[in-house]
Image: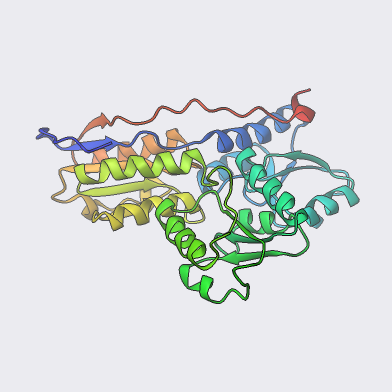
Length: 317
């Protein structure tokens, strides 16, 4: 998808397509809302349901209680696992405490979990490309007791103590930069020519689509605003991508975080939103940008997503 030559002369805000909620995030938030409707407050959620402060605060106001660990949930309480997934140890602890669990793990993350278990059972050493400390990485590596090693950067590959003849496979965190992952994969395949790759690329469709939309938008604008919270991996990748394409980029998750000086002398502003950022928040940020000076809004062409994931059967059944 190549950027068209634009002839618009008025000040504009160009809206990336797609942006905002993906199917996995939408499903996770709906699970918490459905549980609140069905059982009433409090509903406990282990970690942030998705990495967006606006969403988390909105659910908290409705009666969701966010906890870091399961021991903070009363025995027999209702708990929702976040979209990022959890380890087998967390599932075991929930069972031991008699908690009523509703699992909001994104189905695409669950797919990676199943791949890890399958490959470890087949005797493979599994390398996970991802960021240390991210809940998705902790959950994926925690699907098995041993045999999974984290790769964060290209330099980590040189330190791996394995030979080219060993059974080695890899998976990736779903929200990584496509370009960043590609570089690591190339180095891995050079060192381990027989490495087993996932049958389908683990970077999710939404991450790929939003990055492609930024690549399409960036040549047409002079500054990019990414709607997303600091903890959101995919939002951070969108900001980094815009900067790599030579466009100043800023990430905000509230209108008041915008600074008027970002827009001085800038005729075209690009706006996108991470997969955990709601459209209502994006629109409030657009309105704030317009307060700094009149701007027309123009939607760009892009992929229209129609993916949906069903709610857990034990919640709607």
